[in-house]
Structure formats: structure tokens, C-alpha cells
Image (cartoon, rainbow, N blue to C red; front, side):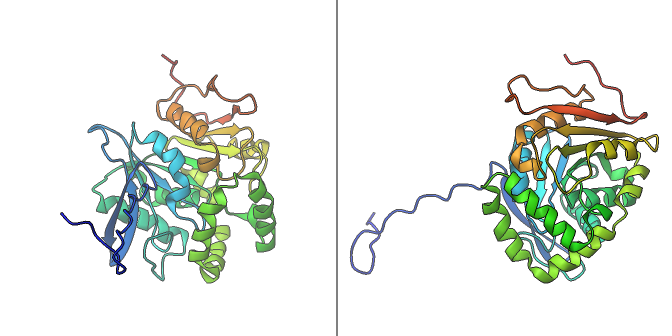
Length: 302
């Protein structure tokens, strides 16, 4: 077989295969006329529980991959870009929390999934809470990492100041993931989505939930109230909420502390006590802040 040549007659350099962006399989589907991009466990166990990761404000699911990949061996994992975000197509009516919750349900329908645990970060948490409000029979458990929105992030200038404080607290490599996503999302979409996010009644909906719910907060997250305030609010009702504080983490915990987050999610999914992994660096610790009265009691570790 002859060697391919360039127009000048010189042999063409071989193209190296593109390094996969993730160990998860990248796929496309079409839902209601919109192309939707997602990642999925390549070979999930036949009896694996389904776990779907929901991204935050203006971002794609790419920054969730460090945590999702660590859980993909045990759970049938999906990481979609919701319509209007990342590589997925846009729709005019996809910049509201209820619309995004319905879009998440449509995605699970498309994949033939009846019930899933949902793991969200930032804006993904209100989306999950709204999903649970409309489809309580379709959500197994909820994992809310650095939930955003509501009065604490209003007005816009306050949210911008909070984001400015958070940026230097995140790994520098996060910018290579986030900046292209924000540019693609655009300013008009940002303004509209911000209004929808801050007006959403996250706290009221959270306290109405009746499924096991894990809330993970970063000790250095400027976008959230202090953990003691969260405990105070969570204690107002007999809830299923378990609140855990991760020392040293800021807002994008799924990206910055994937090992620790995957560890606590696995413990939560198996109803085991929240314990630190002895192999972690000395400055990384998990602290249980609140355990709802009706949350499943922890089973002894084996």
C-alpha cells in the first residue's frame, strides 16, 4: 500500500489519535428536535444503580467528569449537557429551572431509565430539587453539591463578587474547562438564567423532599452561607437531609476534590457512616454537620 503524500510530494505526517476527553463514552442523541450530547459508562454492570450528574450555571458536564469517572465503575453513569449548555443544541425555552428539570426527565426517558440517583453541582442542585418535585417516583436519591441560587446570591453584583472570590480558590486548570463553556453560553443567556436561578424557591422545595438527600458544602465556598446556618435551616423540619462539610474545598467540588466527593457519595449510597479516608492529605477532612431525623441510620462499615 502506498504512503499518502502531501501536494509537494513529501509523506504526510501520521495523525495521532485524539486523546479521549474522558474514560466515559461520548454519545449523541436527539430529543424533541434538539441534539443532546452526553457521556455514559462504557461497560456498566448489568445490575448497577443509575447515577446521573447535572452540571451548573453556564457550564457543560465536562467539569463533573473527575468525580463521575470515579463512580462509573460501580454505577451506570450519565453526564449530559442539558439543552442550551455545552455541546448540546439550544432551545428558547430551556433557560428556566422547571424547563431544565423536565429536560433531565426527557433525557432519562430517551435512555430508557425509569429511576436514577441525581448528583448536581451549583445550579444543577435546584434542577434536581425541581425534578424531585415533579417526578418523585423517578429519583432514588439526591446529591446536592454546593447548591446555588436564592437570596444569598442576590443581587447580580453580589453574585459576581462571590464568583470573583471563588475563582482563585479553584484549581487553575478549571479555567480551561469553564471559560470556553461560559463564552459559548453567552451574556443574554447568562442574564436570563441568573434571574431564574435566584428566584427559584430552593429552600422550600428542599425541605419538601422525602428522599435520602446528601448536601456537600465546601468550607471555602463564598457562594453559600456558613455550614452552621445550613444546619439551622435543615433542623427546622423532620427531613431526610444529610449535610457534610468538606474542609479546604470551594464551590466546584466535583472538579477540585473528586476523590473525596466520590468517597462520601459512595458512603451515602450504601448508608454507611461518613468517615475520612486515612490516605487523604492532612488538610482534607469531612465533617457531618446535620443528619435529618428520618434519614436512614448509617450501617456499620464492613
